[in-house]
Image (cartoon, rainbow, N blue to C red; front, side, top):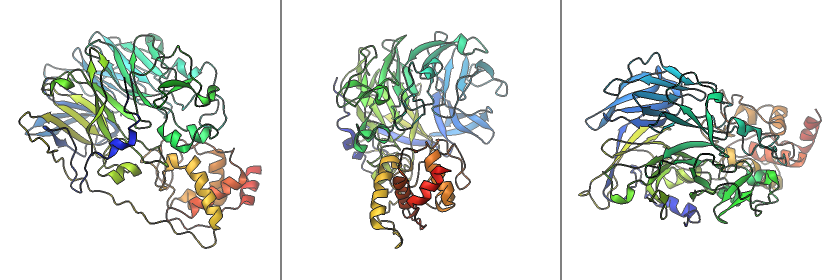
Length: 546
């Protein structure tokens, strides 16, 4: 089946943004923002009573789980409970199941699908790997007493030294023993551990969105693809190739399936599984035939955070048993424009993908400029279906819930207003360079920055939310020279920057020459509004010796 990967970024400008933001939807669909400012909403579940359970990535105002009633077109918060944050939420056989990053809990429900004893959940599974990277645990219940829990690998490519240039991949990747796949546990057995679970599928770097295909009963999952092809292997990949590879993949996971991470990645342009460079690949050499290929390939780095097969009767027939996918949006396509921040629809027929995917709901970011810079106003994260067939989408930036409905008698071309989301102005002015800094060194430093730093800290130096710190006006950039050099040479592990914690670990760059380190730090200290003195090659050389 032909993928739309080749169209890639061309699709990202379809929304028709305006200052008073509207979601762009297909004709006769309408969107309403039924709740907002709830916190960092991750996944959600709509009960048969049309109430809403929402999981929060951070415990706020006394709870990590929200319970909301729908009243007069609004979702009204009724209760917060649970002392742990997380992503996963599901209802099965009279219980509400939720996950933290290392446990699975359940709460008994009454006949109205309300939690009976919110202060005393039962622990179903304990001790799932949580190393701070790819740690979220989503959940799928199959209605037959089984829970499917994806467990992300805390690694980019299972290198001996993670995210280090020329560090080889570990043979027989040991991370796959407890991560990098989907595990199956019993829903009715308490206090389970890894030993009680079954590794259902493997070779999956990080899965957040998964669901059961209603036509076949098979599990499907969206994988977050690997990063840093160009930064780690510039001899094989350009920065543009690194931004466009590998594909974000939708896999059909039969029991025992192996999707091949970390040994291969899927190239949607060549439409092949390619051997990873950490394991001897060169960007062209194909991987072993034993690994499955994706059912659908999507553009790279768009962060698929939920997957939902639509089984309702409200939407037109073409949507029946097809898949909606929420793309949280990229932050690591720099220096190319960022992409995503939308929900797409993939048609299915007889249990298999059929036809090209299409953008279904766009405009969450607030503007095309916001999308390209990665400064989205909202980022779609969770998907759920209501008992009437309505589609619900939550965003974890402003904490909103959108309800999408279809009216066959509605306007042919009128996207519904969903509230005002002001467009952020992106400055086009170039940063001033202090006269004391050599222009040639500045230009060389910019090249090193684009190759090694822009993916995480972005082309504008403003970083990415709670993941990667900004480089503009920070104590680490403008402060002690020796400490700044050490950050590049030795890396930085979850230290506060300007008093704020960031979750991603900065890798070390010891392979950069003294000249390259001095040039990139000089560039950073004279860009993004910074006005600090240059870092000399001699300073770097002396600090490296220490």
